[in-house]
Amino acid sequence: MLLNFKSLKLSDYVKNSSSRAELFFWAGKIYQKLNLTGKSIIYFQQSLSNDAQHYGANLYLGNIMVELNAGERSAVHFETCI
Image (cartoon, rainbow, N blue to C red):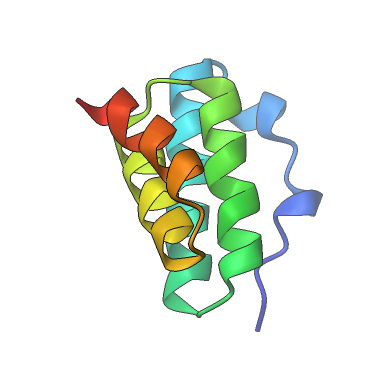
């Protein structure tokens, strides 16, 4: 069963961007656990669009980029974590 986040109206439930970033981060982790890498990337990127410094989203996206042999892209995310 896939989660349907499109039906959520985040602006109705989550008012500040750091909370939205956290919500998208956890959605990305769920999809990653389900081995749905493409969807997890989308949600980690959504997290970063709300909070570009979100440690977890940067770390997980960096790790995914390493797995996808996208070294330069992973470096950007890892550098943000430092």
